[in-house]
Length: 23
Image (cartoon, rainbow, N blue to C red; front, side, top):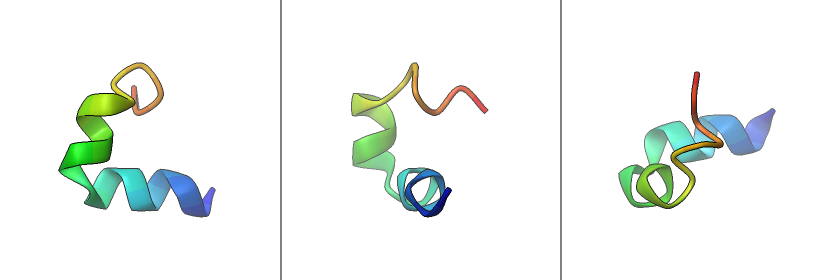
């Protein structure tokens, strides 16, 4: 679950993992 927080804080990763960060 730590990865989810990192992606939420990282806009760059969010765009790359759009389907992953659906929440």
